Image (cartoon, rainbow, N blue to C red; front, side, top):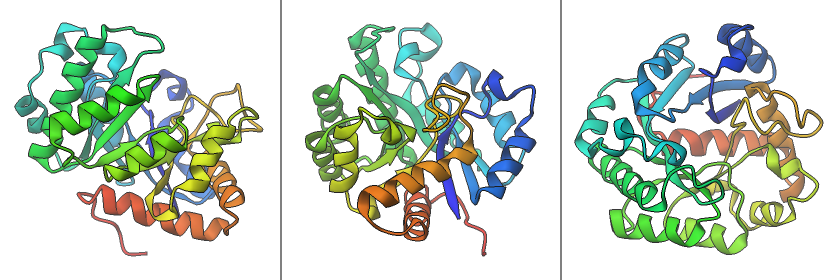
Length: 263
């Protein structure tokens, strides 16, 4: 069994076909669990509604760095975030982090919100889902400063090099790889796949974005996580079955709040 450890099933791109059909097709591809990700706390009810469509779907609560400057996100406290985690469907905090590529929110606001999410993760004893783009040094610094290096989590859609992979792994974080590793110019990311132990790797789609080859440029969906798993297997010269077994085990170890069904 595979797990899509990061997707956005509430996205409008899935509205016409419907989540049950998307899930059914993914199951046919060997995907048995799904984590749908919150990007605005103000829209959490929409995320939860999606998660409630199936026992195979869990969700997170958090603020994407693009939205950090919005008053409904910037002023949320760690304790307020923790309250959302009382729902059994909520198994992680995020996605949160830093994005200096687009700078849709000021860096100071992004860092404040990121630190608040790390605090919430520690209070709730839940993992952090980290989005980072062109902000590697500050990402590592905020994790160290805000949580004293004690937080746990995953670098989602990992797009860094081996140095950033090492820094992330040294903090105890997992690395989650998406369809980007199938892109022609993603050599640095493939080197990070080689470097990281399979015991510290997750796979994801980030659907509906970042569809892997041969679907690049089209709508992504959870069934395509199987293609990412195949790419990981090829890069690491191990079997697809081992990738599926290890990444699924890693997912449930990290997101320990989920009660894994007996096969």
